[in-house]
Length: 176
Image (cartoon, rainbow, N blue to C red; front, top):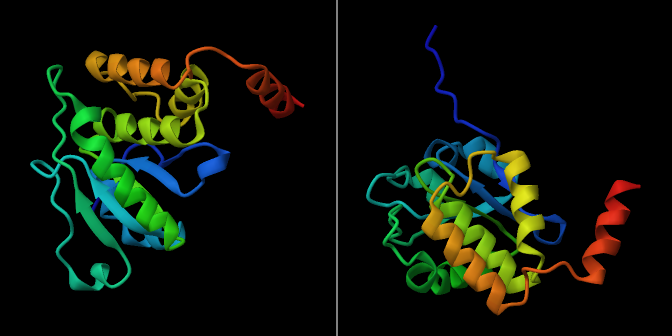
């Protein structure tokens, strides 16, 4: 009996307000059954140099694919280079009622950074709450300190670094 490769941590859905955005790794991007089950109709590959998109034509009937050439490197400006293209792709898929999987090789740095930046830009939650929520599902996210800094700079510009009264009310509701 052939041993199946462990796809790694669970796909990470981001926040209640955007239940159609997921972060995962290269193996999860190839799991067509799970993509269909979650109504993921768009896959954004953040690591095209190491993760190849599936070439089977039957996938292309219901899943659209795009790539952004992100590098998991401390000198790479991922947000200024990739966020606009990622946002356009995600918004277009959501407009069609489809979920989106943003993935890279491990589902830790590139995809998590772009997923969190998208949510920060759209919903403006507190960055630390968003990180805490995400790391409960994928504990290894954001090991790249440069990407952490870039997210903090984005969050600061969006006023998403400090807890607001509305955040406190929302967090109390979750506890009850």
